[in-house]
Length: 124
Image (cartoon, rainbow, N blue to C red; front, side, top):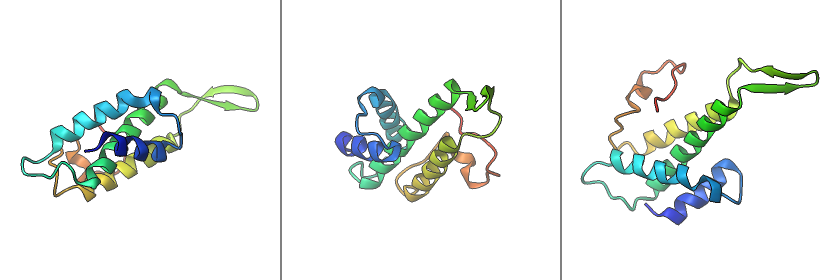
């Protein structure tokens, strides 16, 4: 995995140019991806950069969703019981990249993806 490549892909995924405050999410994602790698996997495969960036984007959206449990309306602020669209889309993207990298990784914490009804949340 190439850190600079992961950073540029992550910036594309979250839609921001300055990602300096998000570096811990990228480092965590790199560690997660390294732990999933199969022993004979090529760690320089570009697909792993995309997977790492999608994990980082998902973890960021999780953190944002946990802190922002309210919705602002014309009348003021109210609790939001609906799902967070950014979190849902980042989860879908993560699933796609896990599938794309299936020959390189052995995901231990994302096993339910194959039989999920789509209502479960990814465990931390």
